[in-house]
Amino acid sequence: MKLLYTLLLSAFVTPCFAQLNFMQPIDNTPVANTNVPIPITASIGYQGYDETQEYFGQGEYEIFLDTADGILDQPILILDGFDPGDSRNIDGLYNSLNFDNQNLADVLREEGYDIVILNPTVYTTDGNDIDGGADYIQRNAMVLVELISIINDLKESDAGLVVLGPSMGGLIARYGLAYMEQNNLEHETRLYISFDSPHKGANIPISLQYLINYLAESFDNEQAQAIVAQVLNSAAAKEMLYDHLLAHLADGSTFEQNPMALLPEGAPDFRDAFQSELDELGFPQNVRNVAMVNGSGNGTIIGMPGIEVINTNLQIAGPLNADVILHFTPEANETIEVTYFESFVASASVDTFTADAMSLPTIDGIDAAPGGKSQISNALGDANGNQVIIDFVEALDQDDFSFIPVISALALENEDDWYALPDIGNTHTSAFVNTFIPSENENHVSVTAESAQFAIDEIRNGSLGTSETSATTFSLIKNPISESLQIKINTAVSLSEVNIAIYNTLGQQLLTKTISPQNNEITIPLALKSGMYTVLVATEGAIQTLKFVVE
Image 1 (spheres, one colour):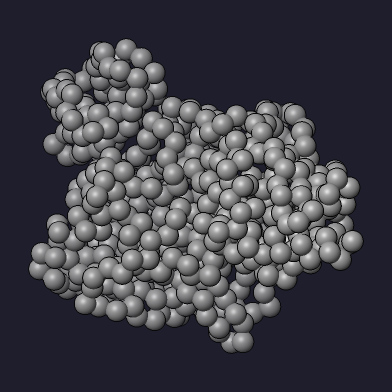
Image 2: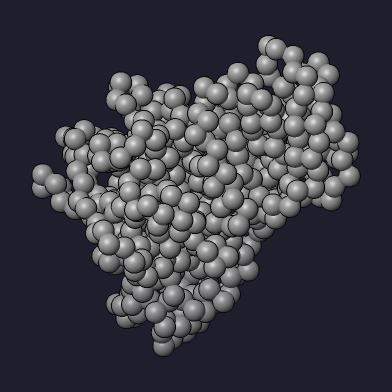
């Protein structure tokens, strides 16, 4: 009976892991281009936390020249994010910039900008097999350092580079640019765009991590174990995940929970070490740092803390079936059972696995926080016709979860509450001088017409450089607002006139006026509907856009 049971459940486990992925569906449709991918190897090596020597990162890049003059003179570097197994190739990354039957890369190329896409690959170096898309962020950053040097040599102008980093790519870009500055390496970069990047950590529900790991380990399924190692236990995942199953395992067990380790904790020897290293390195100082995020700016949550994700019985094969119950992590200071799996042959119970989770005393569980969304169903791909997986997905009561909390994407170092409103410039401190924050939670690294316009405006206007805008900066005195917009002008010189323009998320201009500030502050009475808006503030020597929310 036990042998039959193991064989049947193992047959279910293998297809479950065939396409384990936490990003959006991939479109690798070929993009027309006269150039081809070029291999690249870093000149600077990196030794990981669990490695005995340094290795030199590798990848490939492809240049998509603009469609205006066809000359490499205004390069925009776009980096790949977390991509175990290199399932998303260069074409896939290019296509990920689609929005409203357009493509952000196409729009930029039509305006004379050149697109350069960097893709980490799977490779072997000095006898070590490395999966670049899930490798150490630092080693991938050294590949970027190499690419920046190459592109600066190739470009036929003095134009500064733009570096756009979606997801993990934003961390690679941040690390690489800051590393170059601190080591006196010229990057000739004018603009860094972080796109829904986990500057304070990413999230995969711990309940799902427990279930995936239990199925792989308890039935000794080698293929499933390999996928867990490639995805959940990869170097990049262990560096980024705010809460990781390896921090909760009982001594000597590969899947049983330590009942004394229920609070959120990152992977041992990886998560804290990486965050400390990143914080110490900081952000690049000689570029304009801006951020696009996919999480809601008005506190809209995803589900509820402690919500039941799934409660179903799965008919696996013949007499074998299983009860599966998953929950989000609970409200502050609560402990609940988040994972339950019991398998049966006919009606006889064969095996049971459970795991609990506790939230910090003052912070609700991260799974429901405002943020760029991923879906549990994405982790299982298209099921490849497997009825059990199809039944599992159909039984989900809560598919979306917070993958990149908005607080993390904005790098708000003085905020520890994942649910706090991102009141940038008032109570919170961000490294970014400009941000795009939608009013609703969007799929992680999904491009919209509004976020695309934000990126295009920054790329067009960013040539002003930080030196031309540093003398006068603007910040919101209060955000969100209700009846009036208050703007603080941070300058030592009194200004006689400031031009103001307010836009909605569709780009429609709602107000334009010239105002004489009083004590370097501006107050504008407004009667706007609830939602997200943009205000452009301009003087003779500076221009800046700010986002605000009307309650």
